[in-house]
Length: 232
Image (cartoon, rainbow, N blue to C red; front, side, top):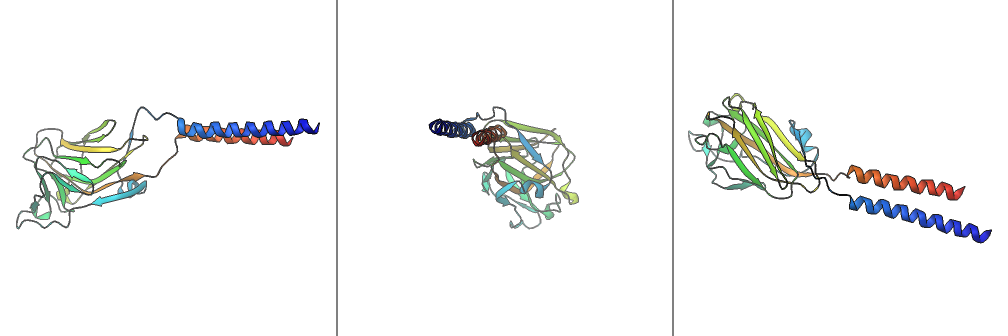
């Protein structure tokens, strides 16, 4: 009887190890999601609270050309791991007449259907900015990742000349996906000054894959059941 009890104990112990091993292996072997998605934010504070912001760039330190309000930083122009690749980059402040908010960066409105384009240094799954526009043209925003492109068309943007800016934040929710670039365009051929500032890139805190959490929890429940059975 004593030997039988010892054998039974050893078998239960081996089963507990097997269940735990299956749970651990399951966490690391679950397939990644095939269809990616992006969450959007319209509040800067809420967006930034989702993770760690590596760069949050503005252009307020640029000095204006006398009497114009415009500065041409060059094309391409890189700041805070974002490279602005518009046909002709420039920034503008209050002397331009197109904003009374912060200094904005955008593209030359003489090329009206392509306002702002840019590349994002690989590895960031958070991307956000304040945006304002002078003119009534609806705006479309496209954000690109290493997996896909996401289009947000027909957006009505706050008038920066009246002192207003909107916030647009994007967070990739698919593991292994990250932002690579963006494009902001006018939805028709009307000239439009659209500009952005407070351009933030960063990364969300790691979140366990739901399926992995369930499998691991199942393994722990199995261990608990085996332990109760061994003690009975």
